[in-house]
Image (tube, rainbow, N blue to C red; front, side):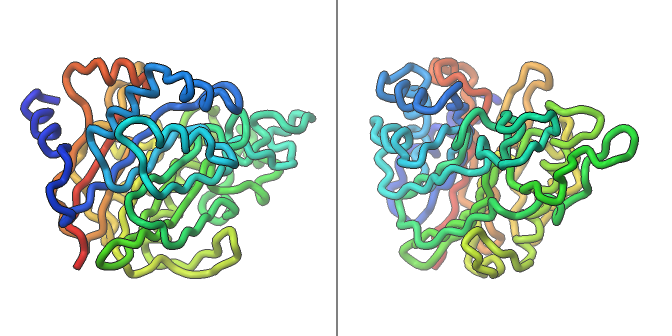
Length: 337
């Protein structure tokens, strides 16, 4: 990323002069700790990485922000304290714990023991581990969660080397490794929907490619929901995605060209007729693979895009202190009339 591009990003990230545009962003902050309550303690202790992350968010200054990789708790204590840091103070928050670390009551890994990390609906050290959180300057009108959807309805079963099912409990397994949300935001001129997701990384498995297949299946849900397919959410409400404008915010853990993920569902998503496929922008840097694009902010074709960028200066003490491999990605759209 050149210095010229960074200067353009910095100028674009200044506070909006008038609310004729909306800045929407997503950021995997990497705030997963080894146990419940540890993130809250670090926030209260004003650890350097947490203060740096808050400063990056306040510098880019989004109106709506999806955080991924943030340890949630049922009382949102950590999230509330993070939101109280300098430069934040969003009036509306949404962060229910998802499937990560949530005990399934099943011996999913078939090792004869219950309540292993791999026996949760989604991998996590505890309930709410490395979850999702939405911050908004506009009221959150309605929410739909699809955390109870079944994996079997969105992709093939992983197979062991002998061709048998890798998971003996396959028909019962949930699709979402973290969460799948449809959140309606009440803007001054009408509703905007945020479609939020954080599929599992397509690595850390074996020849069965269980994580790769699950990542593909989670992205397939996004394709089908955007295409108008009807789904039943966790409250039992059955409906399709609203016709109101939508913006997809997600760490999809998948690059359309690089890395170990399956590509079909992601490429269909990036070419989906309802979404604008923004220019490719690297959003993460891993030691093994280098820079890749895995985080996305994709607006509805009904919205006018005014700008977009990634917070990735050439040199930055903030990025060094933040200690996350991901970068904040944002898009500006004209408010719908």
